[in-house]
Length: 256
Image 1 (tube, one colour):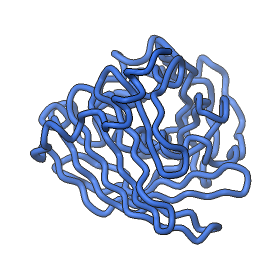
Image 2 (image 1 turned 45 degrees about the vertical axis):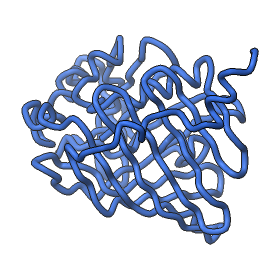
Image 3 (image 1 turned 30 degrees about the vertical axis):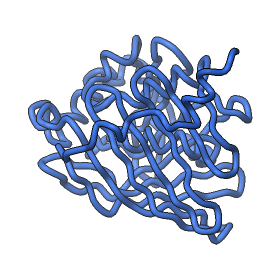
Image 4 (image 1 turned 180 degrees about the vertical axis):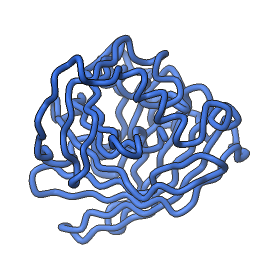
């Protein structure tokens, strides 16, 4: 689900090293990308099950093992494009990242508040799309199957998705189960353009939808693990939860 896309805004530079590539078959031998993407929706619950969900609240734990850091995560998202993710890290404090459908923002004790602009804003708004997997045709202008590669010993179809704005996204779907196992993005951040890989696993059913509950990301020697403990669909979320924080409102009032 898109909560992992949301989480990526918090650790966009913390992604996995490139997995070993397999042999690429001839293009004519590969199934079309739209067939694979549609089948993913089918095997994880079907369009009807996705259509019944209009909001989500998930909780979990985020860890930086090498740094000995651990924190609690709670993510709120709602149809069509609102989301807020809060992570409270021991010894660091609270980190927030969100979008109200028009403005993408982030704030933390380490970096302070900031409003995302340009490509970073476009990518954040795209990632905030609720039920993005089921609505991929609305988000991406092109989807291509580019080959077969191995991910954790499993042959996967490699799909490149090109959004209307921003960099392409690459995904790997298990040939046998058709489940998503890996994602790669090259995203904008305050540190510049950063490529990140993420591995998803531990699929479990939540209200009829098979969802990953584990995400592990690396960049260089840094590893970040996100484990989802609970998911509540169609939960009642207070409207003010998606309001801009006061410090973000102050930034917006300042002349550019």
